[in-house]
Length: 387
Ligand SMILES: Cc1cc2nc3c(=O)[nH]c(=O)nc-3n(C[C@H](O)[C@H](O)[C@H](O)COP(=O)(O)OP(=O)(O)OC[C@H]3O[C@@H](n4cnc5c(N)ncnc54)[C@H](O)[C@@H]3O)c2cc1C
Image 1 (cartoon, rainbow, N blue to C red):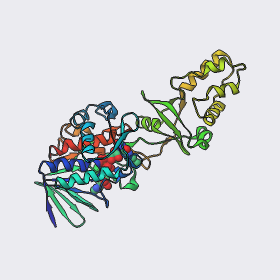
Image 2: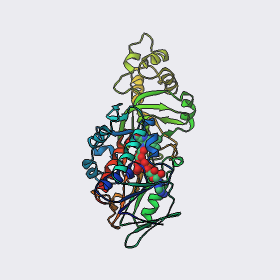
Image 3: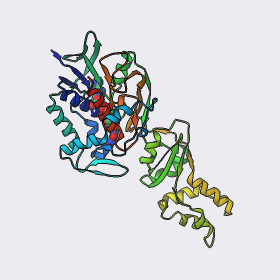
Image 4: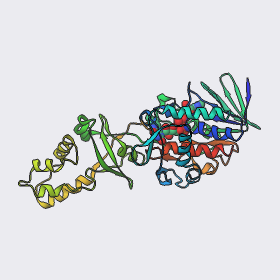
């Protein structure tokens, strides 16, 4: 059976659904082809089931890409305020959790319900369980699935990245880009827990579950947020954020007592010893972690000089992660379709007219905190207004 549409959107995730809504509202006949049995699966599990759908402090420097200017145009033309207005129109209650991050009060499903309602209102047709066999371009694009054929002058690729393969992530978008001769910036896991190896792994692994507010730094990027010790290494927002900037073989630096001084309390103690050092950490780090860290970082002596060196180590603890937990645990995929290949205004390929790429498949990645969805909405809107 042959279906004829104006626009075929491949992937019913955040970016694909949003693009379809924008295009449908403009009177385009839109079909969304989704591989899995339901739309917006990743939205459902996002933000711990409450979907951190945007961030009110969204700025271009919350994103990284080989071209740091690329995302600016789309982000400025579809802002967090625009998405919040849509959420409010649907009566979805939300709250700011921290650092401008907006979450649903109740459930992420309200966001997928909202997107599906808007799709219906815009006349968008969603085809689920679609196995795409082939995409060809003749006078129009022809997309063949197992049993059907879809024809349209425009195809929008919104098939996401490689993170969480068990949720249905595929390399389809990258393969399609290559098929049409577009370059790809090497992909790697982003917003992902880091693994500790050797001595560090053995020293801290039984503290899994312990967390502390730290400043984590690597490659000139720093984030002040919570760090969490896991059975395999380190996680928590501070670590997830720097993981996106970390390269294998590099070290990371952790300030364990941001804005606090530990040495003065040891210097002024009656007796300068480990007990005094341990109590200097009270209220700064969880006790078990402070004790364990001190065992491994015992000052060479208790002189003022040695205490100054200890203070320095507390604010610049050096660790060399053994790796990351990979795409299985990564929240996003960094890298992707090279932005040099795309128009920043419309997301259309410069080489292949009518072929668009949006969302996570593009080499634009956000920080933790609602920025990746804001990119999905904004890039989806940019393409949806143009197709
Ligand atoms: C556990 C987790 C929690 C997250 N929480 C947040 C959060 O709270 N806030 C935030 O901003 N970001 C969050 N993210 C990141 C965010 O989910 C993604 O950045 C966003 O979903 C990307 O949107 P997308 O539409 O590009 O891709 P996706 O949402 O991944 O959608 C891609 C769609 O394409 C479909 N597809 C794949 N291959 C094919 C194919 N061959 N044919 C047809 N369809 C195909 C997939 O099934 C999927 O439905 C989270 C990610 C994870 C993994």
